[in-house]
Amino acid sequence: MIKRTQRNRLAAGVVLATFATATVAATTTLAGNAAGAGTAARAGDQQAAAAKGWKPAWHSEFGSPRSQWPTAWRKVEDAPLSAWGTKDRVVVSPGKSQARNLAKNVDLANGKLVITTRRLCAKVAPTSETDFSWLADSKPSVKACSGARKVPVYTSGRLQMEAAAYQASGAAVRMDFRATLPSDPATGTRQALWANNAQPYCSYDGKTVTVTNLGEVDAVEWYGNKPGASYSTTHMSCATNGAHPGRTLRREHQDPVKAGSTHTWTVIKRGNTATYLLDGKAVEEKEAKAIDSCRKAPFTVPDTASCATIMRSPWMTILQGEVFAGKYKAANRQSGPNDKAAFPVQKLKVDWVRVYTG
Image (cartoon, rainbow, N blue to C red; front, side):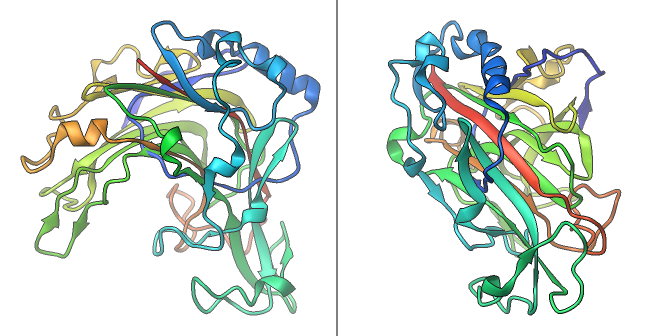
């Protein structure tokens, strides 16, 4: 993991990231910034939204007035919420996740997409991923579950851009995500804005690694256990040896952020490279290693993998909240939540998603 020293940020931050992977899920609540605050936040995006050398391809403004859009985007098709596929009532990654995605956790409010992650207290535990008999008699609770409803069940939301017309493809792609992080972090949670190339994930049966052309870029992953950092990560193909055979080859970049802060994260993919910016500045700007390049360490992909397929397949963007499975461990950012502690409602508020080609 590469860390960068703390530096001042623009009030309306921007993160740019270059290698995109996307399946998107979201949960939203009816909360949002006041209209005046939203207008002020958007006033800071003009430069990022009209990036030189990039051609606007498509965007989702999530109901904000056209008058608030940058001029460069007013003639570009605005992808409606209906274009985003909602993963409803499904645990997307069993074993790693315990969040049940509910469509009602995804909403539009004050020109923003709001993805809500919350704890429900139920009388009985779900018996399977497809069992939702517990839902009708459950109640949301910030406090630990007790009494008749003593079983905690965690819910979130996930959207992914499955419509072919709104995927990102080509040799040069830039994806901008502008969002406000939850103000009161909950342990065991993660908020993520990311994209992938819809290729299969790596697998390992204990003897042999099944190598794939997976490509993924995480513009931002923000963990409730580590709320002071924004993580941007590139994944390319599969490790076939070493300590973690079957895992993706990856590199993680870390920048300081604060809970409740607003930023623009951008992923830029050029040829076989991926690059990340935060608040208009390159992550690890003093580090040559900030550029992730296929077939250069740590991305020494197997000979059977194709950098062209990894980097140039259509990319699918994903917006989501998450609650991890497993026991709570304070030092582990991917541990499960503490069932006996408070679990504040998490609201990830997305202003817009804008995709360019170069």
